[in-house]
Image (tube, rainbow, N blue to C red; front, side, top):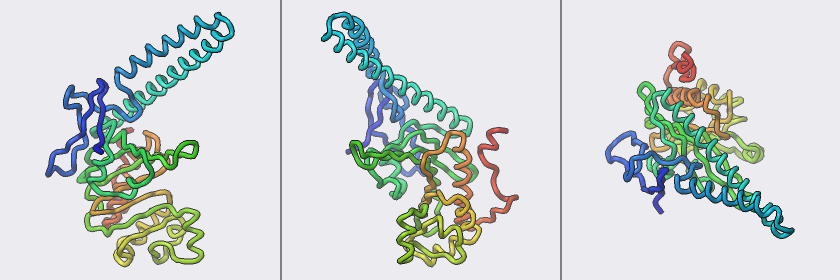
Length: 304
């Protein structure tokens, strides 16, 4: 089933992207009215108006029934609770709308285009990264797309849910997709080493082993189809850089590179994460990243 976007007026459409355009432009406006798509936690004008009318009706009815016997009292309290729940939902929507606007402001400051909502299918078309296979109810939103130097980036939040009912849990990641960022780099997957990985490591080797990996081997798990090529790619400087944190999820696939973390980071750290992704790209390619050649962090440039 094709994924669809919605605008504030309630129009629905499936986004299309121009062929033979690289990198793809993920911006998609409503073909009927030209409005931008809604964010994943927003609502249409019709839904908002209906909620306001229902909330006011419940509030008025609840207050009127409070003084009409015991049955009326119980019904009145129920209506007041329902009105309060609807009002709370409206408040949450308002807060999310404000967060979306703040992300749009950040995109403008960085000189990036902003997309409140993306389709997961459009992301999979770039490269079928493992991130997109987890859980259900996947969402991609608050995306910023732009160019830094010679590199095109897509920064976005990605959310999915595992389990269901009382046992479901939602995971949210902050991700940076570096278009052509793994050109010439062998495919690999780097993840934080879990407790299960460490337990298995007592009995068998888990992942690609690197010489003199030290802290990297304790904190990170590296897998890929060509261990020999990966040992050449993961040179000591790169291994040391990644071992400092140990919480990166990085995948190179079909010449594309994605870098992400969980839980999602705050707005103020997004420019810094973009710079980290560019440094990882350059180090994977074996570039010299001495202090003189390291690019300034985007967040520092923004403060200036």
